[in-house]
Image (cartoon, rainbow, N blue to C red; front, side):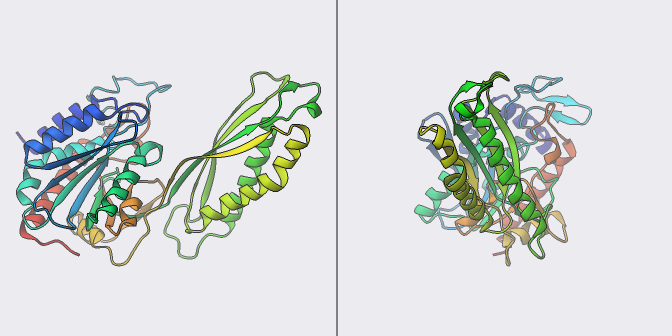
Length: 391
């Protein structure tokens, strides 16, 4: 069986597990664990507090500090409301490649790693090779945060990390952080003919959103010099506003969903501090003059730090040598890479498929991208076997 055939078979098995972030990933974790264990990996499974999800940490090679980790996440985004032409949880050959939810983001990379498991096991003689499979990346990287905290606590952080998110196998050494929030407004319902007798939750949410957009414009007008990101400034996006049920009723509740992607480390704190002061000094006093029980509450959906371009970065050096790239880039989307970097691990993002195909109906990955990833992993196993790794 060729590596590509094995990869496609693995991918078919992986996408058959509908591991939407709201659901359990345990069946997938168990299947991957059994496969890696059959090839000699030492397996650790770390359940989340609910017991319905888990992280997998599998290790080939010696019990030693450092080593290389190949990182993937198990969860996928929902298919609700999307018009698919094929079963989203059955791998289907289409004109452009292979279609299924998660085929690109990011079970394609995981399938390549599983197909290469025998080679990774044989090559891991000089240093350990770890496979990380985490939960809840799509909703705040909760699994990776827990895994990295665990690795740091026991002094077992790897030295190098490759996160296989879809980059068309281009080497990425930087991305913005991704901070996601819900701001929930509680006002006082009433008849639309008497707006002064109620507290319109949507109206205050709109004023809050306008303040966020003022900050967004200020960041746009003042990008950091030499920023490699596109766009080069910190961005703020209003993605959700829910509230009310009739035009003639004062809405009592509203939910504003928003995110920011900081470039400078202090930008995130600046936004949160500014908005907290605006709520404390302006919005809440006005709301509570009418209704003392009015409230505005910020809920953190996820705060995932970015991947900072660093010098030196032996993981970048390794990935560039394996791909033949003469440089590394940055992306706007977030990954778990910054979390591994935060525990002292040199990290890059490099994986098969394009982010343009992710999260959409009829998500797909090109077969030639799987081939390129297999070639990358083949070169990696040769380096591992000979002990020729940077760092």
